[in-house]
Amino acid sequence: MTAGAVWLKSRKLTRKNAQKAAFFAWLRGIMHNGVKKETGGIVRPLVSILIVLLVAAALIYEALQSRTQQNKDAQVSVPPDESSIDALANVALPGLEPEKPEVDSSSKEIINDVLLSNVPKADYSYSFNGKLNDAVVVTREGDEGHFNNGTYPEPSEDVLPLFTEGVEGDALYLDGSYGVALQGVEPLNESYTISFWFRADELLDWSPFLMIGSHLMDVGGSQSYLSINRKTTEEGEQVVPIFNTIDAALNNSCEIRPSMEQKKWINLNEWAYITICVDASAASGAAEGRAMGYLYMNSELIGSGEVSLLNMDEESVCAYLGISCFDQLFRASYDEVHIWKYVLDESQISSMYTAYIAS
Image (cartoon, rainbow, N blue to C red; front, side, top):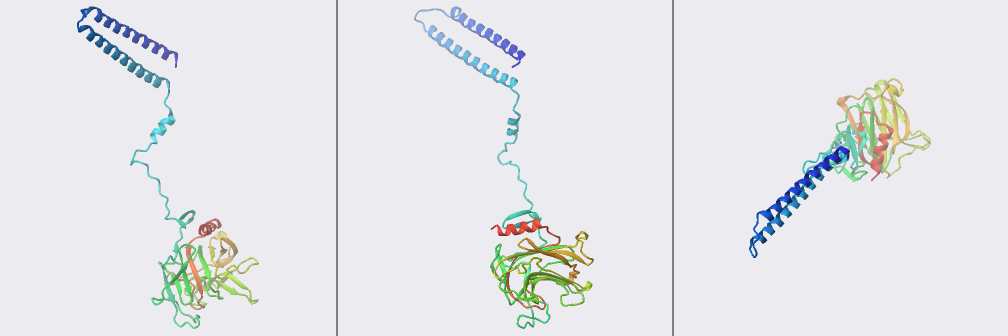
């Protein structure tokens, strides 16, 4: 407390004491001058009670005045606590709590109820949780021993899709009598990424796990497609998976194989996460009419090299699982097929894989 504040308080107390003395002098005057002293009368007791009440009232008044003055002095001498003010300002009134901003999940991938903040939402997704959604069962006319001389698969209402336990929910099961066409896929003529879970009951050479392209039977003409399949070398060694690309217009035919000593990365009856990426940017360093391609298994890069830049016709794009116009049908399961029309980096591919296997 400053010296000025002490002097002001002292002066106030002096004035209060003077007022108090005057009040009690007035009471004494009433007792000695305004009341007759009559023995045995009722006046003296009443006067005594009145005096007691007045004294009590005076003491209560003094106490209230003293408390009020202490509060005023405290407000003058103690600066307001800014943290207290902030705390009061942040107290939310009932029913007026500020709304928390919602996370925009429309542009990010969600796997097993986990939002992947670093992975953009795929352009096309097929989850097969007990139904096909944007996919249809397709079969071929003229199959002989599950082979065909060249027929486009057509939608079939006579064959019902089968499902089994998947990586996330249900998975699509192909029993070797049909394939599935993915609907809505647009041409993949620039950069793209494709990922899916695959479990094979059997593996056959050239039979595509997945195939996307246009003019598939115009061999040597306008045929343009990508596929993932198995191949057996002349030495009898199985190489799987292989990423094939063909663009007949530019006579481009390329494939990416596992580049390590281990050539067989897919085992029967085991789920495998396959990812392919194509980078069509000029910075990729590929030759004209080609792009850089990358092949991943369980988020691990197992092969890379040049692939054909595709020239798909928008009006005739086909996207198939487990079927083509020629090759033998086989038995396998599929889950969580995703297609992006740009390149995912390795951290994004790893995030997808880790989120799937976390559960």
